[in-house]
Image (cartoon, rainbow, N blue to C red; front, side, top):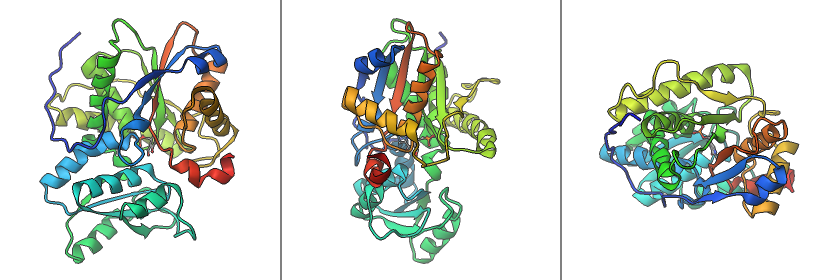
Length: 332
Ligand SMILES: Cc1ncc(COP(=O)(O)O)c(C=O)c1O
């Protein structure tokens, strides 16, 4: 295997890593399918954990170096990324402003409750949940005399994705691929930074199995845009890491669009069943929007015979569990 030397990027420590890697023996037996491993990135340790912690270590380090006094980002009302950003800001002793989709609810629950406890200021953005108005909010913060660092939707910048390049190295240390091959890694893909980091990380650390994102959003436009965004982020990350040729031409982005159901954040029978199964067989909670959609997809793929008993699949639990409480009425 070629040896790739990566540049070390400044990091603001936020995550309890390595996160555990667990065998889900009861789930594998129940499904009669492949061996299933779970990488517990819901246990990154910052404010109920999740995949954004790894991205924020690099993003916050750069924000601090640039003299920012405020972290500004955007997401859905139940955004895990926003909750993690608010926690990172608290830990760094900075302000946090969040631009959230929707309107102020009468009661704050789940991630939104945590955002409030973490001291974030919320700007309600109506139908815009992907940061469409971030620049306007940034200008008004500057008029207040603040120096905001704009973090894109999902923390999915080339810098943020560096977190998942390093996560690939972490997995390799826990599970040497040459001795214990992993046939596929499965996870929820939305803004693409996690996927991009894993693609670049696979090239750097010699993972040759499939990297399969389950797309949580519906619509042809998103289906067309997401793989292009993922490659562009992965290439940007490679450049930041001093390895511009890391992501070769023609590298495949595997995205499964079959499980987006009625769209982002709409809970269906597949998500409910995945949440129930993981809780009852493994004592593990999935979140309704991302990990239950991806696990529901994996369960269906196994039922269709798309994985054999001899294979080994690694599922990334990317967090999001505080949203369970906000969706209680639709889950229980
Ligand atoms: C729990 C959870 N899983 C997965 C994702 C998707 O990660 P990415 O945006 O890097 O594609 C998110 C994004 O918000 C998330 O909150």
